[in-house]
Image (cartoon, rainbow, N blue to C red; front, side, top):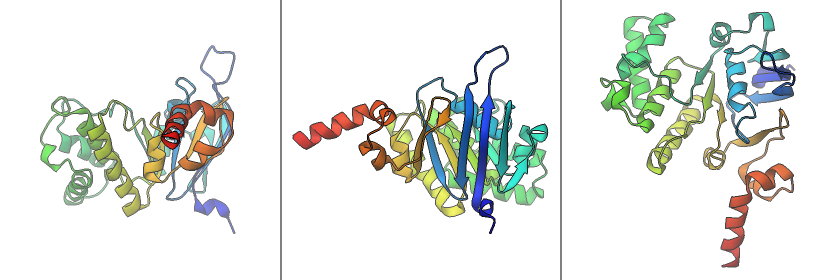
Length: 259
């Protein structure tokens, strides 16, 4: 039995360094994501979390390593954004990266037309589904500058989902959102995963996302990923990274217990 058939993504021994640097940013990193799984990756700023998403999406090229998308090896000589997209991966940037002179509907439909993803009617049907899924139908004729940060995030996710991704990569999906918009967005992401079994990787500083989405959580530390655990396990495990990243939450729990 080929166990890789149950995988959305496998990365083996990934190395990356910026031109002119003497040290790797990522040094021997491994990652396995099962089909339909959601994984949150957290850690201190500047350690390479967003870079990892860019590497997975084919926007940056590693020095070495092996990438497998849905059981299929993608040689580094072919590792680019177009080839990765053909394998069903979509990246949602932290700022949404909406096109300023296109309406919400046009932002969502443009990649579908560009990649010839069906007839005009089929594309419009897919766009309507994306608008409804992320609850932005009322904003379809607005331009990005007319949207709040929360709505812009939802439109960016709708645009990515419309491409029917098998692997969705999200960079800080709740960054810059107030509590209302954050709490409105997460159930939509959870609903999308539940309905369509989309495999997801979320890079985030918002550790509570892992608990709310029922996702595994790991940290990028020492240029590699730590083991994966559920949120509640990280709260109790005796590891330096757990004490560092969950210090405030542990203190809050302790005070609640005492009181």
